Amino acid sequence: MISEGYPLFLGPEHLTLKARENWSAQEAKENLEWLLGISDARVEGLLERLGESWSDDPSSHLGTVGKKAVALLKKEPFSRQDPIGRSLTDIGLALAADLGLLVAKYLLREHAAKLKWEVRRKGRREFTFNLPVLTGFANNHNDHLDPIGVSISKSWAVLRGERDFGAWERLYQDCLRNV
Image (cartoon, rainbow, N blue to C red; front, side, top):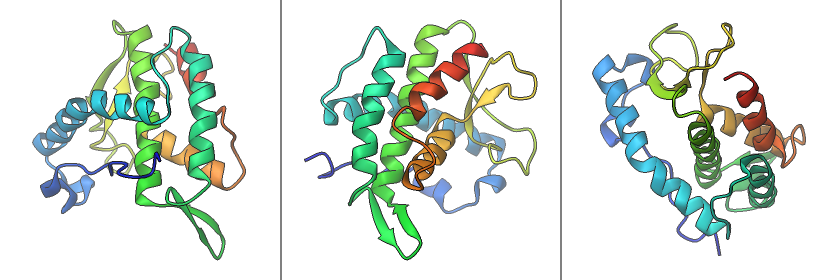
């Protein structure tokens, strides 16, 4: 069963004790290095648990993966029923983060010369401040992507019935248009 032993998405312990807005530049870089160090294993683990492997057609593959992931996100232990609807659990948040890493891996595979991981240090009040983001997009108003944060947001939207399994495929396609 996929939920058994699904690894939580836990950053370096000493960084979790501090609000990310208060991280130093060195601590934010350490978080980025941690993410880069675990991303391959997390994506491989996600694909293995879903019975999938890498594809030469990322867009279609993200649709297939999205369909399987949404089925999981809508039930325990990935989400739970609350008085106002379903909520992601820590395991659900981990699955959502891994989906974001998968989108990032496909984007980097297609555009390794243009896209790269960086720490976002602009706009202390921005949601992405001190977080790893993909940079190199052409849109001046949206020149970076937080694939983990966006994927988590899309997962919440799935639980609210505002998005469907194609959310990650559409994210990938939208990003490709802006490279």
